[in-house]
Length: 105
Image (cartoon, rainbow, N blue to C red; front, top):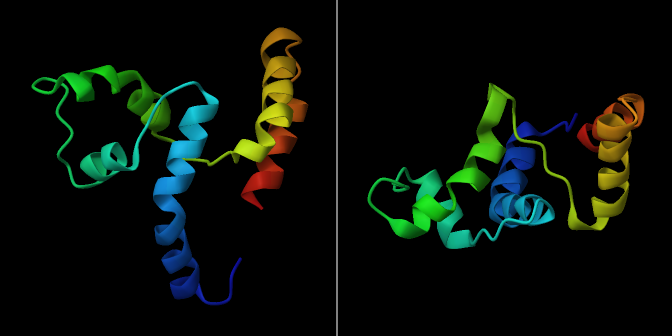
């Protein structure tokens, strides 16, 4: 863990939009910094805005289950998908759990 949490949190805020867009793009969603801002400010309304309605699945994918968001960098796409396949197809969760644990550290 970082020694200066205030500096760490400042850095997280600085890269928040970029990381959110990258992680969703891995899953095939088209998310813009503007959409991230709308959600962050509470201005996202799928009932009244077509663009928001089109992004409903992407945002549900990010917030489902009540778990904290975990960012997977674009550069890690291949090992991420490989580990995910092992978990989904081979029923072997170990590579995926290891992958996520290494990224969280």
